[in-house]
Length: 159
Image (cartoon, rainbow, N blue to C red; front, top):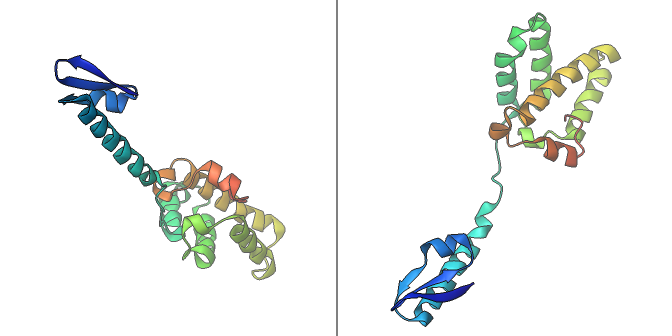
């Protein structure tokens, strides 16, 4: 970036668009340099504000949303409601971002271990969880704060 003379007593900078468009100073070249440095410094200080915000979307809210948009419309709505209530009882208090592969794996193990479901039934339950988490990472990602990459990188089963 450099300061150049635009006309008598008017200086401006050439370089980055955001500075180039707004920097025209009446006065000396030194004054224009000082103002340019201040603008660059302010821009650099604001870079830390691009940090990703943390989402606090509860699993119980996701379950309710999934039921409204998908579960209630299925032919097997009664069974779907039962499955979702089972998910709610074990994971409903957690935030969606906390439900990773380990949490889903523990929930799945409890289906066959504690709840004594057959492997085929447990797979049906897992498929509902998988579909719900898929919706959370795609069409509802702005609300849930999840995306496909974050699920894959955390090793989540629920991708």
